[in-house]
Image (cartoon, rainbow, N blue to C red; front, side, top):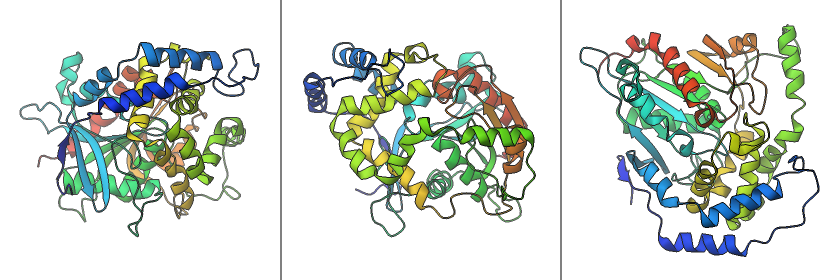
Length: 412
């Protein structure tokens, strides 16, 4: 049935799906392993994977995660042919103060809305956590097309297939503006693909007081990863020593980014394996949580086993392990992939640089070429999955960045 307006949704998987999963886990046979002394140099450590599967079978409780998701108001809505899932938690309103600013928070791969489950209440209701209710946001957390509880990506011609982050940004704006009927400025936040989508959202849909009487556009952008590159010619632009050093280090990441080439070129083949084997899916994902986080080589120092499996379960039970990889192909097909020559994201931007991300954060001067940078925070710890690893640091930086922008968010 079509969902022209947001319809409440409850996550509820049948028992047979869990029985099927248990049977697959029980039948799993470990393969011959490369001896690398537990360094993960060749991929997911067999001993860690074995312990994860054992806990998955005998200690993990999906109902706990399902209840954690259903604690929040979940919705499905159709934007054209694209079905989207999102969580929306209205923020605390304070008398005689501007209404809470809407904030779209976007996950990436191999993440999901699981990343945000523990910060939704902190962002929407600061007073529950010792904060100031004037910092409250109306939190909107969508699942990317092809991920989790959203439908598979739909291309412009109406066929099922990869779409790029710029197209997703357009869906987000329509979600806020058309389906949720916000008539005031909103914020965007993201890391990984969420940073790319949010950057395009700010570039294509900024608040424009002269052209938009409703003023429903992006008033502020907060990132924990650089989403786009500046619209410059690297051959002719005079770069700082820090920029040259950073670009050199970015060229040394082949060992950590080989997965991108596979997912961008052969997502269909890979998707068959990921959708058929829960253990294969777990191995593919948990390796990234280990390599991209501030965990000193031990994933369990940054994430609980429950959190790791919660995220994997969203991919497994929804059958989206394959379609989630399509975004990499969609990005390669997007034209243009980056900002046009001379282009810059003119929306006020805050950037939180976490030291143990998959790639080193760009120097400040590079970010200033790309964004209207108003806040730049070098974090003392944390990695790629900021909302899970260092939620307090991330939330406080989001609040501090948006405070000066809130009075631009006029009442409806």
